[in-house]
Length: 321
Image 1 (spheres, one colour):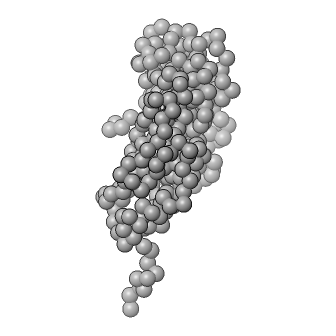
Image 2 (cartoon, helix red, strand yellow):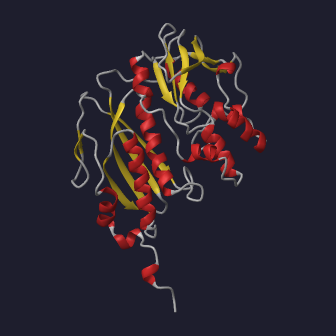
């Protein structure tokens, strides 16, 4: 006799679209700014500032995550974190999320349940909920998230405001996600703290608005890597940025992992993406917010250098390369 089909895990095709939507939305707590949540043709969110900050990221299985490396819950948390990091980098506070999910019909319903739990957990860490979204059939599991934010009356902090004489400062961790990826790529699952940094980044939530209040002239999150993302600021602002090597901390834990793998910990710190740290520029006479530590200066010219010298090697992540 074949296996009892009643013991086989339910797939999303067996659950059905509307029951699946109910599974991932019922009983969830929305933020006060959500006027109308899931269940209608569109969501309604309050926009106290009169302007809405909006950003979208798409995560594709086997490109941005692997279920043999991360649980669905961890993937859900990471998907939200990378989006809220962009809201943070504009100096805004998050107000809500819209989630699009595409997956094959034979995807276990339990996988979507765990994924949803991760999405909601990370959203609620930032004080918001999932206001709406869509689910479709797809050849591979794909998550598309739109994050919305509020400027609270401030101007957005863009990439184009850095000026010669400003100081460069960073908030959050650098190099940890790249180190975790290197560990996983070698077939290991520890150190747990390092691997966990790749599975679930820890953006410094709230540091963006605090930087804006402190007078930040430009800001970006380190999704592509410190040097690459500072390059975006330098290009948009028409300036040069010089990092002071002794001020760019290389954590001892990463040094130990790099030694074990025959890698370069400083390379992870300078070029590793997906830590979702914030790097910003501030006027030299402006006190830095407590989250930030100085790592360099802005000058006349173009490009990004280390102690006045170009970096020898790739500077960070770029799609299609």
